[in-house]
Length: 562
Image 1 (cartoon, rainbow, N blue to C red):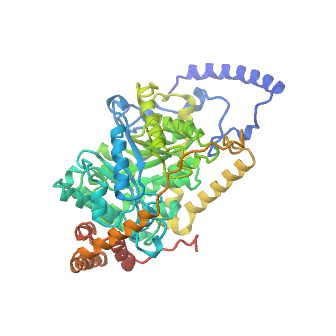
Image 2 (tube, rainbow, N blue to C red):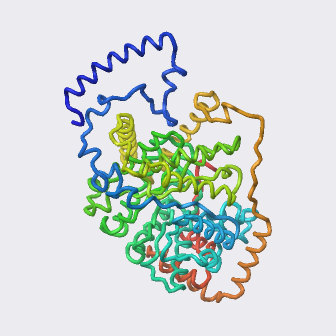
């Protein structure tokens, strides 16, 4: 028991006196809102007070424990942030490869510890800049990458064996990771010396974000290929970032984000073990996760703490992993884009600070803090600097890194953590009964759960049951101007010209041979990664590689969109 019996009995007596006093006060001065509206942003009910009775079944060694020890509720590292801060990893990408390279160097000068890449929409969808489907989108929401020559410009001057790089790329992940590997090899850097992450999580695309290319089954096969290749040849690389961030941005609750993300992770583990025959401990330590840190402070902290405990239990007890590193949940966090408002945009600095603080108190290993202008445009250098300084102030000034998991033992936080875990397991078991996450996606289950949650939340905003400052409360007619970063249309013209030049100078017969080899590998079920690396070295483009996948595996059309 977490508390002795006599302590609980005394607490119960004191609680009764307090409740009597509350009733007298409320009879004269009612609460600011009805009892049913005291909830988290995700609608978990919040009681007026939490006491030892709310965690009376908690066992310290079993449920909380010590940092660096199972069930890792308090973090993977025994010394917490005293040994090392989380990685300051600001998400960046815009315009051409040269533009983004300049932003990367600025961030490294300002104290960024790792790089994170946003790609433009054509690249995200596996199309080159000269495709009719890509027109007008070049560089608008991230960097445009067509061939290895672009990629070499992107990483120009970046110490690839010393700085880890994250790439938010999904359907074309094999092509972009192949370019990173090829760029390292061209520089003489062995693959076992490079580190970073590819997002490479297609299940969450089918559930939420909807950058789609091939059907679920071959999409997961390509992911298993990267996991196998990484385990054998690129051991410092995280070959997947299992992402709840976009699930939350689509409107899910915190519990849904937690449950669907972890069940996606379980699906990938099962596929690699079944399809590749790999022992779980040979690849599980390199699995990574990506969570949203939303505006409800304590709910987000509880979610992140619960995530580590659920994953540790699943890896040890469900998949029988023996290596404690396989039990670790390592995750990146990004503050909530959907919490930013175009109205009174400087309020976003405050939102982001609290969301970043919640991520740190939840024990994140890596963090991106959103810029105040991201709801309106690509972030400016000035806004990015403020966002980075937000993390640095949390780390260096607030004192929250002085002790590990400082909220452990809080009646409220531990009770909320337990509730989040219990409700997440309910979802996980329901998906198990459906036959797994792919089967659940085909039934539309997670998609419908998220859409219902998003609709309900918007209704609450419209009814003023949930508050967004500047949107439905403390609204101001004054508009504070902020500078807009816009991508000039000439970026597209220049990018198309560069692509044409590459296609003129390359050995097109060699390119065709490499693409045919890739096609045959797809048909035979072989690992595609070695073929992708050879193809990009011959300057095959992102679209040419993805067109092979579309031809062999077919294209997926979301039934909810057509």
